[in-house]
Image 1 (cartoon, one colour):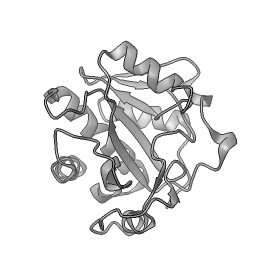
Image 2: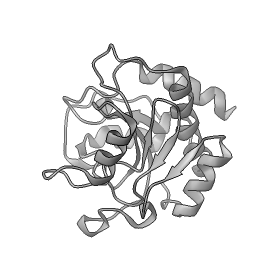
Image 3: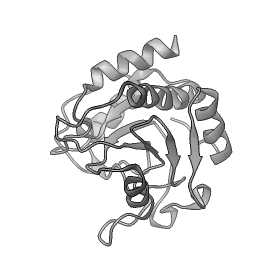
Length: 196
């Protein structure tokens, strides 16, 4: 459990991990903080976007939709591995999820099955949307998977978390399937290797 790092520290952490980062507009102050608190933060949540094309994906994740205003995450990880920062603070990415999962993330223990949606995840998680159609067929380029690993590891490194603080949306909220195309177990192994 920790207060969120500053926007500047967040940017530095990603760059220090070797990532190429693009700052999109007023990302440092673009948030949903007026809808509720952000923090304490407990982990990192990974999503896929169900979109095609980096420019389109970044625009949607920054602006959102009429029914779900942006930002929809903190960073968009494109197919080429570039991280586009679109917001900082509370973001509409996690939604309501399982309090038992949150307790497991805080304790860095094995995740239980997510069978409730009663806890505000937007308060507790950093979020990365990863450009992919999420159909199980759209490829995940190696450079993109490496960027996802680096981004999650960067935040874990700052907060002193292990790979167990990184979860997929599908592990948080019943009915969600993202990310699809790799397993979170595999991703956590990559993050653990990087943190060593």
